[in-house]
Amino acid sequence: MNRVVESVGEGVTELQPGDHVLPVFTGECKECAHCKSKESNMCDLLRINTDRGVMINDQKSRFSINGKPLFHFVGTSPFSEYTIVHVGCLAKINPLAPLDKVCILSCGISTSIKRNHIIL
Image (tube, rainbow, N blue to C red; front, side):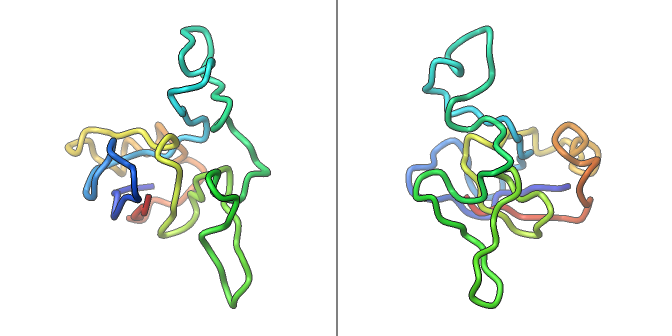
């Protein structure tokens, strides 16, 4: 799965449009005790949560079809052509890295390999 940031929301400073990223199911808020620990990466805010189908800040879905909400899959919606994710669930990668190869580092085995874009 190829991921290129299309746009960023208010307050996002770590990424900008055009950045190459990989979605990660175990995100990092960088503020909780787990993120600050050298012994754990199970972020209190962004750990894998298969039931979380909405954005964390307002508990709302960003997707709909025929007026009905669609929900995120493990916080990243890797099967969609476009997705909206928490910035902590993205890892910025070298723009020279071949996206069709490095996708395996994220969730590429279980998803498509077509070009996708991300809106933060």
